[in-house]
Image 1 (tube, rainbow, N blue to C red):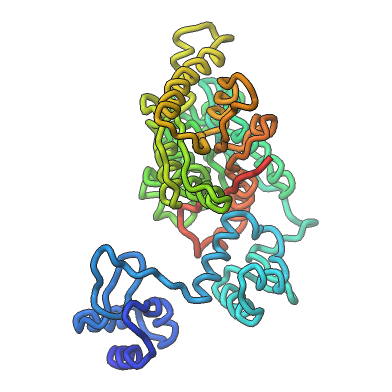
Image 2: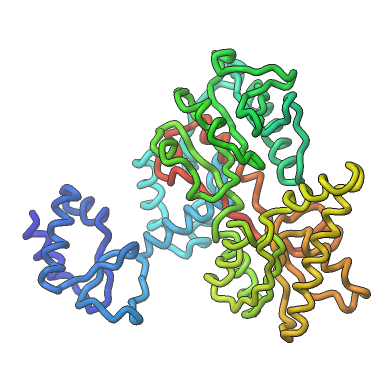
Length: 452
């Protein structure tokens, strides 16, 4: 079989630099094991017929110089698969609704309806989709609304020492609201618990320490790690449960403990960390003819600020960095304020500290003569830019991340982290763990820039 595969590949029409079919495609075509395919490719490489580029695949010919790596040309099906997954992560394809009609999808992906049908049929065979008549759906358990019992779902957020919780941002409040709304619509009874950073204890909303055995009827758990710095105790509380656990992961993806990535019933959902938000912002700006930006961040001692800037660079923009790396988040400034002023003055004092940093960064940009559009690390920074400007005519061109209420009042274009899609995917996973089997353990939700 190895020799047959080698001979067949050599007989296919190709030229140097063309990419070979993927290992998965060869396995499917010849109905052979991965080991046989890898052995065939290894032999071809020894003969200098092909070369491998890590993460991109195998290519015909001798290996080119490092600065002459060939551009990967995706097949029609590979492009379709990438666009389909992208639309799922972005929330265009909703797990709780039928897919758009075939004619609409074929036009969206620029493929024939026959190619689309073959692709969707393959997804049905994989168990990703199901078909009812002419309509396709993401596979899910069928439960009669009349007979479905009320099920308990554990929902954990951060809390103080007596179990109290106060939302620190609009996004956190949106997440809380959407979890309650979706749980109600799906007939779940939420068991609301808190994790206290200082003690590492689970606490109910009456201030009592609790354990998971107190909730034997739970059929799943939703864990929020937003502003939970000591997240290890939270994860280990649920380490041995058999029901699905969905985690809203508000930390760098690389910090997820590997032991939980190996668990079949766990899935992590990330919307804000990593380079993708910056890349998406860069794509938006480039479509509008913008090739050069200033990047402002007074929180650059954080991976999320650094990654957003790296994403802008990776998108192909020229980026002038005006950043301050003393602190990692707005809450660092608030901690200083709490130690300095009375409780009622904390917000204003913290804001003044951020503004001083931003004024210095802004003056540096002016002295450098960089007058291009300003990309702000969040809406709060953009709002401070507006405050610092004496007249509306002098307000710099601004765009930011967060899509907060303030961005609407200021008519400021801002990147939305798509909390609605985040909650939709979390609940789809809770109800249909196998439906996510084809995706990575850390699932990234894509957002988009909302223009005002």
